Length: 359
Ligand SMILES: [Fe+2]
Image 1: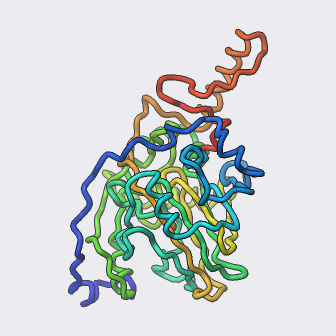
Image 2 (image 1 turned 90 degrees about the vertical axis):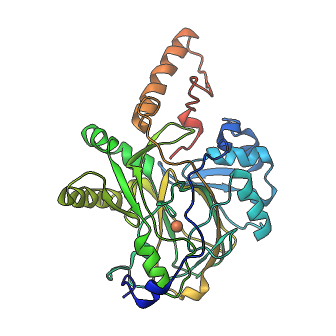
Image 3 (image 1 turned 30 degrees about the horizontal axis):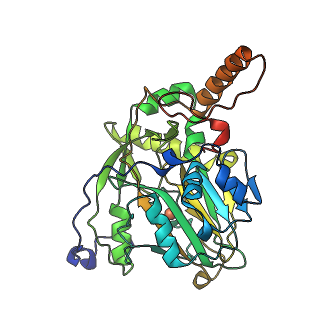
């Protein structure tokens, strides 16, 4: 079976050392114009696909983005989609480099990108975790942040990718569950994917690791709280008894899979792109029902910061909306009803929710 400790697993020696924690360069979103003037001026339309997540930009080529537009793209949090793109693999590498240090998945052979292929397995069978929701290799000490997947070939139907907002998932918890989860740490493990990789003929270049990350994390730019859970890599909750951990994970699994209102499903076409922030969303590729050889894409990403939770500077989506509503009322009152669209609301660089599509 895919997850057995086979002779191949026992004989395998990964060539690379474990990654050391590092401090990424300042997030490019801090350099962006909060109004996204350059990016929106260059697009013919920006359509929100659902109320909580997913925006499609039309009439713009990612290959032609200026540095200012690239920075503004980082402000479109959650996931942004494009179709009919002409960007080459070389330019895709260059675009990734704009956002930070090149990420490398342990199963990624080319250091600059991951080749994404189709799958035809039965997602209801045992240990078919490849279709489970995840943040890309979230078990890293520095999990990836900005990620771009460009699809080269796609089947006529099938192989869609579903994205769900972790910011909204946290926001929809009751205040009691929010407070409870804020103090917990999820245990992220690459052990299963390591076994599955070797038993499937792969050559992972780093040994498996287990990392504890806050179950609720603070986004370094928006300071919004998001859930930091995914069923593919989170195997337990630190410090809890086994049954307690089991039932909390079951609840989180249910909470995620019941979130049709916080989800967008993207149907790929050749040359289409998804650009997302792994710190704010989870995603899954839907397998089955099509010829896997008809699907191929290239994924590039950069390493993000080590996930952290700072209760003194972060707030939930609802708290953000309520605070901004009150502040607007105050400002409007002082200015005799004139609506003011402040970009930076305080010294913590908490950006205006309405301008960000932050989830
Ligand atoms: Fe993924």
